[in-house]
Amino acid sequence: MRLSMSHPSSSPFSPSVPVSEVSWADPARQGLCHQWMASIAAEQGLLPETLRIASADASFRRYLRVDTVQGDSRIVMDAPPDKENSEPFVRIAALMKTAGLHAPEVLNWHAAHGFMLLSDLGDATMMSAIDAERPQANHGLYMQAVDALVQWQLASRPGVLPPYDEALLHRELSLFPDWYLAQHKKVQMAGQDKETMDKAFALIVQRNLAAPSVYVHRDFMPRNLMMPHGAGPLGAQLGVLDFQDAVHGPITYDIASLMRDAFLSWDEDFVLDITIRYWEKARKAGLMDFEDWHSDFGAFYRAVEWMGLQRHLKVAGIFARLTLRDGKSKYLADAPRFIHYIRTTCDRYRELGPLLKVIDEIEGTTPQVGFAYGRM
Image (cartoon, rainbow, N blue to C red; front, top):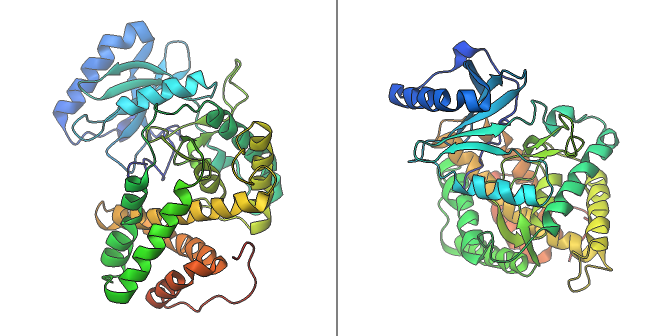
């Protein structure tokens, strides 16, 4: 996530719409795409006349689907190079392949014009297969996601991906006061309230930087995971998308992202169940050799909550920006889920009490009462 979620609304492999739905704001770009496709059609076995929309994107990137003479399909990424840098996508796709993950393969890339041909992972996201009313019915799916996550983290090497450092964590957190509060709520932070928020943000960053670093997908959630598709050694694995903003950072981030979803809420029992199972697998893989995490799930879970809090504050800001700046109104409708996540976590830790009070005043909500897991 570059400070904008790459495509939280839909997967690049969601069901296609008719060919006639493809529209181009720039006729010159349409011509460039047609020229590029014509130049690779024979080599790649493409049927250019079948080009159609696969999904839009929260950024300037979009995805098209095209059929092949073999009877299957490919994905075309349309990413204008003056607005989107596709190099990280290509580089991280190769990293994922090396890690043994099921990610789109880059079959052709016209870097100068921003067009890319990818293997097609199908049109069914993990999200589409989830039964939101029966948490345990999704247990197997989540364990597949956990397996993919541990596999990704085990491939980690320092110095390969950009660091999820103090500057980036703070930059992301600033989206909350800059966009959610100032632009959406029309509240400018000042005086004691600003001091309270700044102090809380500094503590959140400090806590998260203390965690060991691994490869971080940065948007690891059911909308960016694909149901098993096709034959071959990777056919039984969940596919992984939206990885172009991956970094090297806190091991707590992706499990927080998976279990505290941007578009889906689970009861604490299910969140704990899957998180414990992730912890057990990660511990067995040697990923929990830090302080007392290897023996104390509670210590690890508290770190996950602090990481989740950073993500929730950031995403509340992103969703406000997507709505108010980019005209994507549906995103801000999910803001209450994030405010709930934020308030629940702040209520669990005494040092976050002042921040909770500020947020409650802004939101006009009643302070929560009662015991909560992990309060310190």
